[in-house]
Image (cartoon, rainbow over all chains, first blue to last red; front, side, top):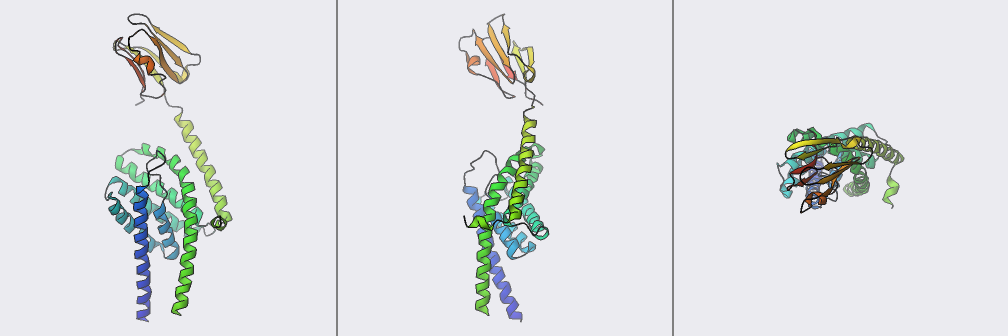
Length: 181
Length: 120
């Protein structure tokens, strides 16, 4: 019995490590994209995909661990560790994780698209709160309407990607359990 | 397009409602922005000789500076410019319309500055 639960946790550990690695790379890749609009902080939010997948596949705690690890590792890769951008994306990512976990639990009728949009909005708000805190300049919230407008298309895109990903993960999970039976 | 079929009805509804809310926030904040103060100052020899609130100018207003180098300034609703100047380089004229706080047209030979005040 003991060895079985150990095996399961090893599998889980491997999947967590994989998700952290993927999220860190997405976080890094995103920082390489040139920003098409003159608003700092607008991005696709690809790394958020992994957070939401982790929320669906695992639970809040695991997803939060993955998110925290990926912001640190992703910033390390991008060379922005402990810079202002790091603190902003850290605050944003954690806020997004908390909000998405709550929405996932409370509003069961909403699909991945809505949840990822809400995650993007939460990310923006968390980011701006941190920026206002660092800069001592609340005027930075003037960016919020523009950022919110971009969170809808980016949220839809990542939501669709998450739909597909979750489908594949569930399918592969079924195959795994079939094989182990 | 297969992926689009996985969007739930609740999602579509949610996106529509959210889009409207954001549009309202956007409109509200941009209507706020356009009400910014636009006060133009005409300064000659270091002294403010005229202050014009550009938001309150209804009919175009010409200001002519007679003593020293002659200069004509035109103020309209929301903008102001140096229309004509007798100075040699016409840099103040080439500055064109001033529309934002901080915009300025400067003429060194006649020691004249037209500037839109930056609100504190």
